[in-house]
Length: 102
Image (tube, rainbow, N blue to C red):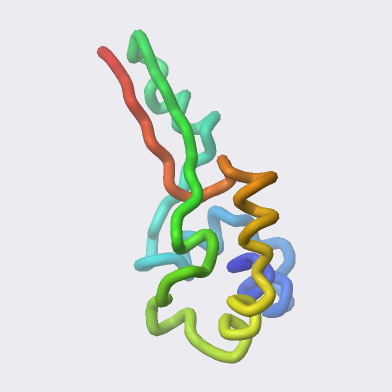
């Protein structure tokens, strides 16, 4: 949704999700990592368990920060396919849980 709002509708479709997160998610400079990137960061650990989970933010079930308000978000909240996402994309959330042993 952030990519649609800030890249596609902003006429900047070349922006990556990393760019979008760094500029528009949370505070400036916010980083997000893929599971593969997290595995590389934890490559020196003997045992690593990584999973991502959906949260209220991914499902548009909670309030958003001031910079993410407006008619587009209100419409998205009404149309967002929460049940489809829960059923078919349960590991597609932005929240990553990492357990590792040295």
